[in-house]
Image (cartoon, rainbow, N blue to C red):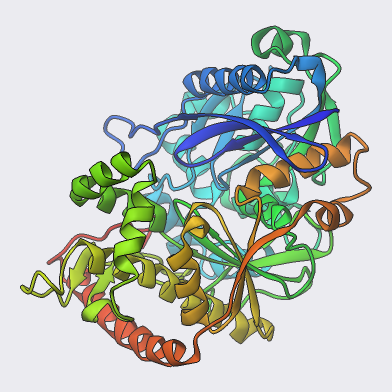
Length: 520
């Protein structure tokens, strides 16, 4: 049996996952990593390439050890990562500077671009599907303004997953799905648009080759082999963005298919033709898919998984003890209790992530509304359920926005990521959206998608689309309860109005935004 390895560089951790060529997960090793705020630089999230490479190496070694495999057993390796995070290199290919995905240091640069280049963001958005909020242009401009000596050394740019592949192969390149999130990219042509950089006064010679996912970049270098234990015969294969490769791991590879990835952030994605123009109001993001000819319309819900972790760790010590005694996960205990709470969670309205407003993106202050002093009504179970409902409601709003501009009618949703392990959460998603919800057997879809890319490069699979037919199987399915759907329609409208009023408190300076895009 031969094996494929996927490196998944997420917002909060890095993982090495080994699959066999039939798509069965063999082993996984994971380490958390932290993106530190640079001293004196507000809202910065620096990506520490030295420390994080050490963590990546450990994961590769540990995954091999856990699987009882040698490096020579790994036929090919690929990588996926949080999109928007970038790494800049010098002319020798050494990493100079990196930032994580929601680094928001370039506030002044975003404002400068909007004020001095009227209509530029709208024009670039129509070409790339991206706004300046998390794009690379303002960040590179920040480096030029704030660290000019470092900027002068910049010779190449890539994304974080590409950086891992470069460390393994010695080749710096990117793919459309990941590189497209820089905003210096064409949705239709699936390649860099250097003139965007020229127009705003940054280097236009820093863009590496664009390779489609599944393209062989080379093999593991001797240096990387010595560090990781991988063989120098192991192929290094271009991967892609976490959401797009996650869609591959879910079999969402054809026009009109829909997926929700429920992780630290929740992404709602719908496959559309790459010629489909982004919406004029810039409300939804559009990215290249890893499948040629397709883009993905995407809504994002901020921090849904992280909010759940916060709630568990801040308030649920009793459930943690109960879970430990029963030998189950704490979330399973919370779901059992939440399942006895009625639809609507006694009117509790969580205020965390707003729905997607890509052109003017900021959130209200984190809070719960409509709390009761009746402990039988307002307790950990009802608040937990309200958070589950809220994540689904915001997802439904984002999907409605995508349907409005794409014309795609949604009847079925593929649901994956950590949230899809929750039986109650899956049913709530079906009830809120009114759609059939399908959960794949491999819920860690992003890593599987990266393994598919590796397998295509190694010749195991003919292409990405055909591979999914063989590898993606289904574990559970949920049908919506029509009565509950009607109730959630009303709750959704109530939440939208309440959230709008909460935003006015931020606007008046009375409360603090949970997150604000640069320049907003």
